[in-house]
Length: 88
Image (cartoon, rainbow, N blue to C red):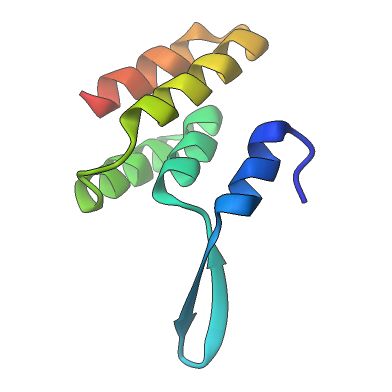
């Protein structure tokens, strides 16, 4: 389980899928984008773009709100600026 409130909420929002007889626990697309937006590795940025293309009805407001909080706590405003530009 996560330690931060966001992590705990992400665990609660998880979804379960089944493939090849296996149970797979997955984060929501929004939570995955939030996790990836914090690391900011080039591969994560590409993953975010792919998730956004696959899920055009994503909750951008929730993503922006949560990333804004992380950006403030981490004193890294670029986290918010980067995700904001990707969501446009």
